[in-house]
Amino acid sequence: MHEATFRLVGDSPFDEITAEYSASVSLWCNDHSDLLVIECPRGTVEDVLERVDRFVGVSDSIVEGTKLVVATETCVKTHGMSVADTDLEGYDCLLLPPIRYRDGARLIRVIALDPSKLTEYYRALLESFSVTVESKRELAVTDIDRSLSGVGQSTPSLSPRQREVVRCAVEGGYYEVPRGVSMETVADRVGIDRRTADEHRRQAERKLLGSFTL
Image 1 (cartoon, rainbow, N blue to C red):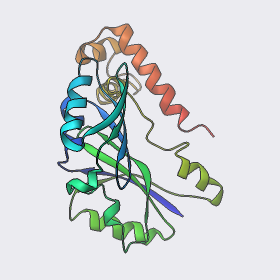
Image 2: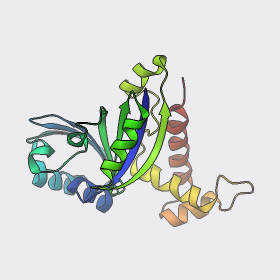
Image 3: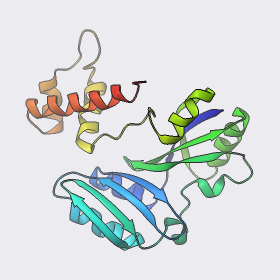
Image 4: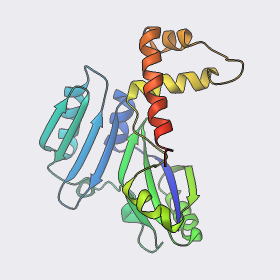
């Protein structure tokens, strides 16, 4: 069995929300309603919730700090928006939920018994999206349960600020030897103090390293 994670750049409302508000959205799609888990910066929660309500409607929601859990009134598919699973027919591939939106794009995980089917599906996606292959791997039988449950997957959920700090650090060469940038400089570029930047970095590193723990 083989698994691939594709990054799809489109123009759906969720793509726009994550780009505009530096938010992340995890979506479990159902025929009648969807479940959303959203993380967004402080001060944007109400605006993000309003945007979601305008798009698919909000049946119920729980807000805890910068994290929202939303049950929608309608499914995204009823609004003519493909979440990519509707394109799987004929390719012998399966979509593994959730679909993750961040930085103006979505990440989907797809599995197939035959790797050539993933290649065919990738080519089909190119007809509708700008596609990047984020990761691909062959799964041993003993790995299947962990992959289907999402344990150890390659895209742990970072908060928007954690992702911003790590991205700035990587782009600046913080992890190179010798370091190309200091954490103080990273903090200045992000617009926060050094101690806060360090804490975001440590939390992000803990999540990233934990995703590889057996």
